[in-house]
Length: 221
Image 1 (tube, rainbow, N blue to C red):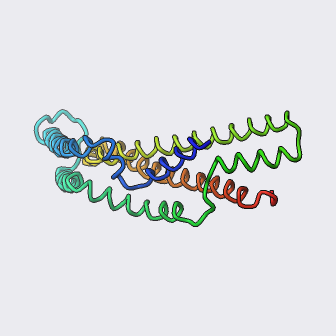
Image 2: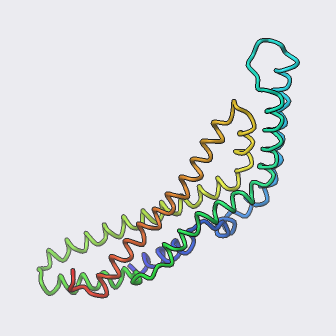
Image 3: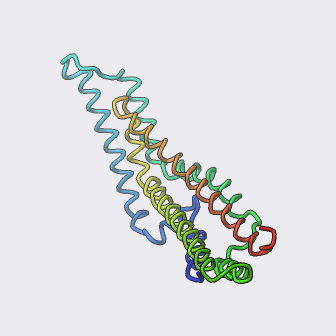
């Protein structure tokens, strides 16, 4: 149970919309970010040239975008890909604000060891040994599901970091109507991961409040 307390403290301290912890464990992501920026700009230029060739060179009757709109769109998304880091940081700052509100709320402290002791004391007074074993099993099941929720939140944090540091390539896909659906899917995934991370934090804090209240006043349950 004390080991579970240690895992709980470590994971909750690492989660959030701040990518500093992600970079601490995956420092190569920041180094390779410039590669993705260069790749994104190259893809935009390639898509731009290909669509211009379809407009003026091939004449095969294939559908092509308006060259003026295509040029404006390509220049716009080159700028977006180049400044993707600042744009993503702005979105993370907006999503991180409610996350900080959730995590910094004043709640009873979570201590699984104390929770286990309280359960043992209550059951030891009012129940037989067989019932005590059953309750201990239930407590372990509860702790195991809480641990799985912690790991799920950590997995979402890692996935969010991957989306952040591959953002320039996603912006490159928005430079053409043919690939814009990929960019829209990335935007939905990015926003969805931030929202699910908020929901994970909310569920974790609900569990913390339940266990903390039970430890502080076990007779009220």
